Amino acid sequence: MDGATFREYTTEAIRYWEPRRIVYNLVLAAIVGICFFTSGFYKRPFSLDEFLLFVLLCVLANVAYCAAYVVDIFAQTSGFREQWRNLRWVLFAIGLVFAAILTRFWSMGLFSIQ
Image (cartoon, rainbow, N blue to C red):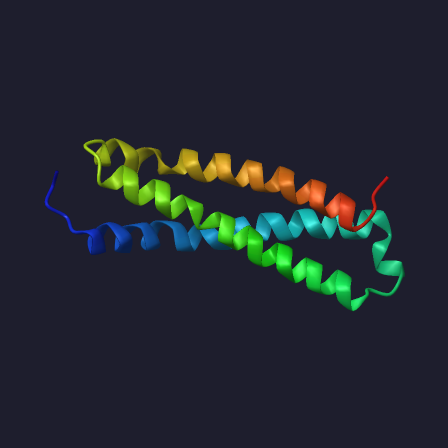
């Protein structure tokens, strides 16, 4: 172990993951936007319940993003810290693809895409 503290691991994780949260949210927003406009959903009124469901799903997507912190901090405390720091992008890519797939299916259901 390199003598780093939990605080240092957490700070490093925040520095790495938070800038990528913007990319994550932009990709998911693009998927939702495409589904929204291709479904013609924008042509009818948006109910309050639909809006609240949309907000809830946005919050849940960002809560799910936080799962990366658990993996990252755990890996940083291991003996594989240096290798992990070079491969964190793999976790981001896998998580982004998984979230994009879930977002597409949720959007299809929310906007009733046939």
